[in-house]
Length: 443
Picture 1: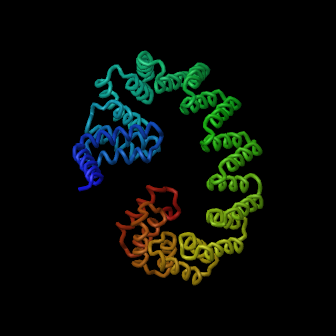
Picture 2: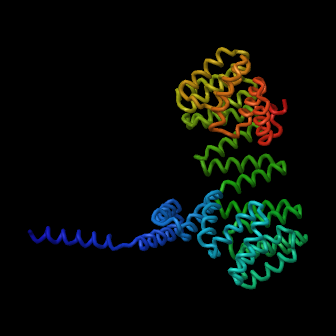
Picture 3: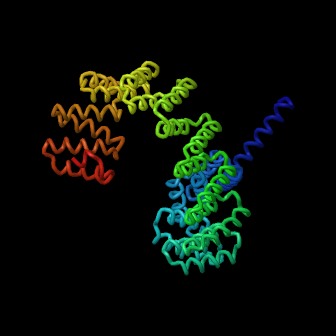
């Protein structure tokens, strides 16, 4: 064999032998280590893949589950966070960091008894852990045991003078005691040391609001906007503050600035149009919506918004023209079908039942589970006393949308008409639990 091919073969065999020598435990450790590194770099999606790779080899890895819990928490995917933390509690009940995270989640979801039990267990595991004492302080505060909360705050801060969770509970205690100025001073000092902690700012706002100091509240919101310029929620909160003060001009300017700095944010543009409609004039709102449509005719949300604005101003024919434009441009795709539903509803309200039914049937021909079309068809079927057919239509809706109050109310009517009293009561009861004020149930 020539020398070069023999060398290549040797390299290949060496590589294969190295791969073969990598044990499952080593692979798992590498995945978790890589996941931790990627998480610290803020690369959540890649980090998630690494943790899941580890779990494919071994489902019982607390550290991989903890990595996923931190990712879900960062994304505010609370169901996933809760599931991952519960898995760790099952696999490794002595995992203190995970237990503290779970305790905080239980507290946030108002499961006070469970949070207290967990806090007690955690302190037995880690009596010198500042975060564990901060969790107990928060639980005691929520239970209105202020003396107990104060004692736990002191223990936490003795162990870690910069513990953010303990500082927050301390500020809450001061506010509860009407010592607002002291709470503000404590929080300001905390902000100076840790300006990235949003909770300190929000607690300051609470203290200033208790003092009816609107100017100070505004300054805190301005600080939040300056510190977190990409967080639209703080800018919207500032606009709402101006609205509460009846300062329409400043609120409008704030919402306009949001759109200017985030021109691709459709929701904020829709918010601004709604503001114009409510606080300026329908014409101003319509003009702005048309501007957005001119800029991006393929964003159908603007076109549906424009049609709704026409309807609110009593201009039914122009609304229909907008919907017809959507039908023409989107055909039998999602938006085109929804526009047909909108036209059908308007035709139905105008007494044009044949045209409405024709559109509904056209939608269902291409999307057999279309919720709005099925609801309208069920309405037709009830009017025609085709109660069994109505039940089929409505149960099709509920298969995909089990909490559809309208479908449940209509289903109750259909069962009632066929003499199925128990089924009618069941449907009405569920609708009432979901929305006690729904007219369908009230009738």
